[in-house]
Amino acid sequence: MKKVLAFDIDQTLNVAKTPITDEIADLLTKCLDHFEICPISGQKFDQFLIQIVNRLPNPTPKQLSHLHLFVAQGTQYYRYNGSDWEQVYNYPLTDEQVAKITTSLEQAAKELNLWEEDKLKPGDEIIENRLSQVTFSALGQKADTEAKYAWDPDHKKREKIVKRAKELAPEFDYEIGGTTSINAMTPGMNKVFGMNHLLEELKVNKEDILYFGDMTQPGGNDYPVVQMGIDTITVRNHEDTAYALRGILGIL
Ligand SMILES: [Mg+2]
Image 1: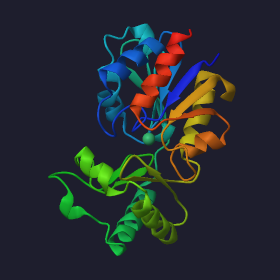
Image 2: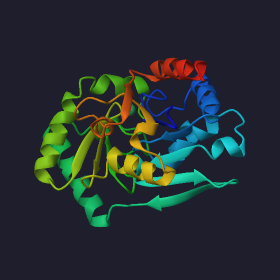
Image 3: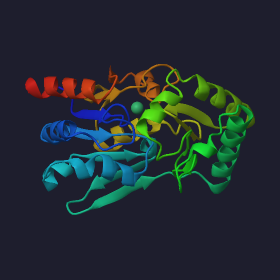
Image 4: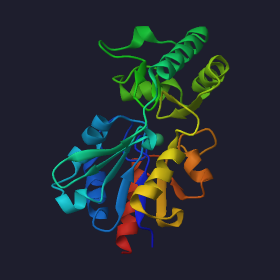
């Protein structure tokens, strides 16, 4: 039997950038009694709390000890020490790397007329430094979900931006994720990095893991996990994930 259930977050556990539903929260809490649960996503630590941890219905410290947060694609790892979340490791980008990625993404988007600064909500930003990676969100972090879904459903806009950014700063990797996002990082700092550290930290083998993701196609931010040979379930949305989790809990 699998020991670890690992999850992409956006579009796998939730509607992109929103807290998980009551149903997913309930299913995850139940899974904590049977599995190590590992969300892994490009997002920041505080979003893991807002979107997942704070939504769990009265989890016990024992249940939380089985929850492992692989932040910023697993370049940061947090675990629960009985009273609080502690950072176990962190592999940040240098300031120079952040600056170079930021410049290349901005220039690429501007050249392609895809720099949508006028659509940002007050205080929002298109490019965000997430310490271990830099994330481009075409309409900002705070854009309405509907607008985000409509912006690039076939990934074509982001593929163009990635192609140009890769010409401008070829030393970095660029991945399409979420609905309007591109994540950029140093090569290898993708979900493979996170999953390899997960194997090490949890002392498990690849065969012990079942991974859920919505971007498992080549070029998607879940694809590196597929390439590693980890068993993967491709979902369209959190409803598919809930369906699968009900099935898993049903046969325990
Ligand atoms: Mg996703």
